[in-house]
Length: 204
Image 1: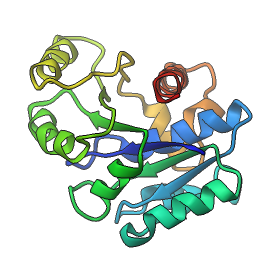
Image 2: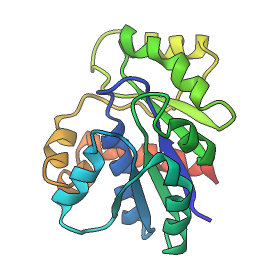
Image 3: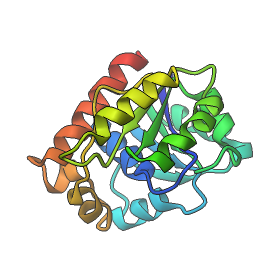
């Protein structure tokens, strides 16, 4: 059985697709076989997969009614990690993605608008191990620490790995690659590696 990780958020622009493909590539780089299922109507991960030119990991355009079947098919094809890039709202497969997942990651920027959207995302993930991932954190100021406190007030788990606002992710994504591949020694690559390692540790 594959490990299933769902990336869910109620608000767009939080880096959900970037983290989804970053985790999948991190798994491939350890010798694993990852598959990304893109449930987001914007199909950002699917576009990334097309730009990649057929290199692993494969990206499947998902559909909410078929999600469980698509996950099982990926497992039969040898996937040992399935990453679901969920829709940016509660519907359209988010509930099903959470139900099937071993772990739900909820990317969130350290801003009031993003934090206000967390309760709905946490409710969607109820019943599954979930963690908020603070993403696009500024290098200075108290925003990240305050966001961490806000997550704790909600009674949610906050991932110990925080990710900065890194241009390396955008540059890599536009070429169908990730920071781990194009900028291997960058802070962006190291943060994704640590997020992957932590996610695998608590999922197994």
